Every structure is written in structure tokens, then in C-alpha cells.
Amino acid sequence: MPTAVPIRFLLGDELCEPGGFDPHTTVLEWLRGRADRRGTKEGCAEGDCGACTVAVGERRGETVRYRAFNACILPLAALDGKQLLTVEDLAEAPRPGAALHPVQQAMVDTHGAQCGFCTPGFVMSLFTLHHRHRNEPDRPVNRSVIDRVLAGNLCRCTGYAPIVRAARRSVDAAGPDRFEQQAGRTAQRLAALERGDDARFTHDGVTWAAPRSLAALLEWLRECPDARMVAGATDVGLWVTKQLQRFETLLYVGEVEELRRVELTAPDGPLEIGAAVRYSDALDLLSAHYPGMREMLLRLGAEQVRNAGTIGGNIANGSPIGDMPPALIALGARLVLARAGAEGGIETREIDLEDFFIEYGRQDLRPGECVARVRLPLPRPDQYYSVYKISKRFVQDISALCGAFHVRLDGERVADARIAYGGMAGVPRRARAAEQALLGQVWSEDAIEHAREAMADDFEPLSDWRASSSYRMLAARNLLRRFWLESASGAPQRLVVGA
Image 1 (cartoon, rainbow, N blue to C red):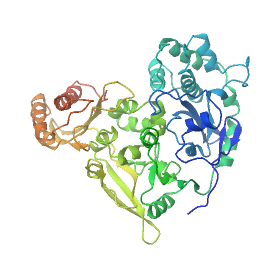
Image 2 (image 1 turned 45 degrees about the vertical axis):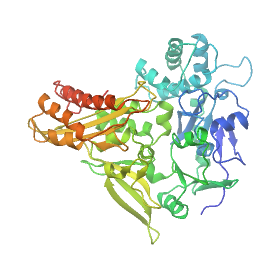
Image 3 (image 1 turned 180 degrees about the horizontal axis):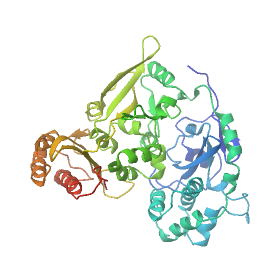
Image 4 (image 1 turned 90 degrees about the vertical axis):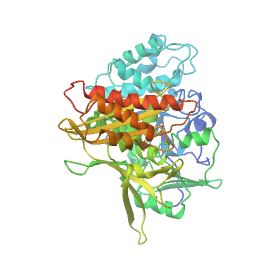
């Protein structure tokens, strides 16, 4: 096992080596309690309200990419080798009268704050939008883009109109800010912090480990099979802050190089996505190949959540209402699982993703095994595919129901059908009776009605505070009908875009 080494990151422009902290410590706790940075606020402590939003910079070649994160659930140790910016870092100098950052000035000019509690979080989200636009000027920033960036920041008193105006004004601000001017130097400093070995430290009997390779990760799992694996901490963070859970070993997978790759192994596929790939990194590629997945991905949490959450984490968590598994199951995804081999190598096995979920709270994971990657077949021109999410709020909400549909036609008849739902059972599950009702039938409203009725043999959904059993069944049937209506609308592209 690797020896204990300090965690190092840049706090603004200063090198920071915090010591003597519990590995369960979040960035927010450390900022307010140890670093005396009180601008970052605690609202919900579960990654929903955005009052705690900070910007995290990661080296990308000779520059730095800034993204918004929820400090309330982000482990402090996950900042190792990165740059952390809070609202205190943005002005030219931390003193009255100092020149404000363009984002801050825009909020002042448009009267974008009243009580001000949520304002630092809004400012940091707009800061990352400002830099994204500076780095990608060919990607227009319209109202829908601004709304997506702000979806994870809640305001109870100002109203969003002046904040949206501030976003527009800050995006249009001319010239680079000092962070862009210093990006080359910052990238060099971050490069100097990069490790060639694993990171590990222990405090009060709790160990944090961040292996750099899959082999090292699997060796940790062999030695500590009960270690709690942490990827984006969008779930684990809640277990710590809300349920007050404690773990002896926290095994961070965010630095494992093999798990962060997205690869097209051959021109005709499959597409392979590493388990530690973040949603924000996979969104454009998945949307390009599977347009029907895009809108669901954009509703999977807010910007801060997509910047942290990983595809493999959503799968390994095994939630029956996770949004990603139904979308992948409908495509025929397969899962690659890995563990340390007897001779020191890596053993892998491959299963259909739908077989990974055995029953509520139980997945097909053997001792010392982890999710390594997902394999997706590339789409064909003779298929329809779409995903739909039903929730109480349009964005930033857990699904009451998620439905994914994939149909391949041979002429006018259904040659293959895969229908998968989350929220209809204790695990994500295919509607096999409905699929059978479609096979060999003309792709028509009559076939859809037969399949809708057949769903009674597929599911007996439960009732909870998100939705009743009868509502879930009706919605599941209606989503199938919607899928057919959209596919039959005469649109030239067979891969139907979901909503």
C-alpha cells in the first residue's frame, strides 16, 4: 500500500496543504471552519440549492478548465492537484474598492441580489459560464444555455430575470480576466502538483486512498473489500452530510486513468465509457451518437451535479430510479466488471447491464470487484430511440419514472424492441411482455395499444410520495404511445430526440 502523503491544491493563487482533517470533511466544512472563507454558504447541504457553489480548475494541457461544483458534498481530499476558487478570489484584491470581476460587476449593475445569501453561488456558476464562453466562443450562449447553467442555483427573493441579465452581460464582457491571463502559469503549477503514485492519508482511523491505476484500485479492493468507493460523491456526500454515516476506508476512483476514458474501439463500435467518466464529459459524445438521450442527460441533476457525478457511479449505486440504467439497457449496453487476479493481473467479466441489477439493494458484484466500463453498440439507421423522464420538477429532481425505448424495423414491421423503465420495480427493468407484443407487428397504433395493455404483465409498481402505482402505470403506457407518435411524425431522422 502507498505511504501517507499530504493533499495539495491551489486555493486561489496560494499553495495549500491542509493537514489533520477527517477524510469525510467536505470542501464547504473546511472553507467555513478552517480556511475562514465565509462567502461560500450552506443552504441545503445536499447539492440542490447551489449556495455553496465553487469553481474547481483542472489542467487541460497548457490551460485550465473551470467547472462549478457543490462544495457541500465535494470531499476536500478530491481537490488534490486542482485549483479551488471561491467568491473571495474573483475581485482584483480582497479589499474595499478593488476592481470587481466582470461577473460580480454585472450582478451589481443589473441588481441581481437582494438578501445576498445565494449570490456567491450564482456568481461562481456565472464565472464558469464566462470562462466556458471565452474558451469556446463558437458555441453560442443563448437563454436555454444560461438557464441550464443556473438550474442548480436557487433564489427565493430576487427573481431570476436580473440574474439572467447579469449572465448575458458577463458573457459579453470584452477581454480576458486575470484567470485567463494567468492560465498558462496556473497550468504549470498544477502540473507540478500531479502525482506519479497513489495518494493516501489516515486520520483518526479513517483512510482516504486515491489510486492512479486500475490495478492499484483493484489491489485496494482486494485488501479492503468493504471500502466505500467514491466517484462524484453525489450520493456518498449525502450519506455523510444527511445520514451522518462513517466509513473506515474511502476509496476515490476519480484519478484512475483507465476509468476516465471514452473510446470508440472500432469504426462500427462499440463505444466504451469508463466508470469514472463524468456526465459533463460524456454528454456531447453520447448526444452525438444517441440524440434521444440528450434531454434526459440535461435533466440529470444540475450543472454542478453533472460535473461531479459519473456514469459508473449511477450504475453501481443500483438505485431503481437512477436515470442512466434504463437509457443504457434499452440500447443493449453491456457492463465490464474487474477485480485483481490471482497472479497479480486483472480479471474481467462482461455481462448484460440489465443482469447487473438482481433485486433492490443487490447487484451482481463479487468480492473485490468493481464496475470498470460500459459498452454501447453504435446506432443503426433503421432504428428509433428515445428516453423520457417524469419528475415533479423539470430539472434538478429525482425521477418518478424514466422510460427508454429502442425499436428496429425491418420494412414496416418491428424486428427488435427493447423497452426499459426506472421507477416501475425494485430495479431498472425491461418490459418484456410489451416487447413481445410488438415483435413482428406493423409499427402502428394498433401494435402500440397491444403493447400498452401487455405492460400489466410486466409491472406492479409501488406507490410512494413521488407517484402512485396507478399513475406510474398510466405514465409508462403513455410514454410508449408518445414514442410511437414521435417516430411516426415523419421526421427525417430516425433517432428521435427525447424530451
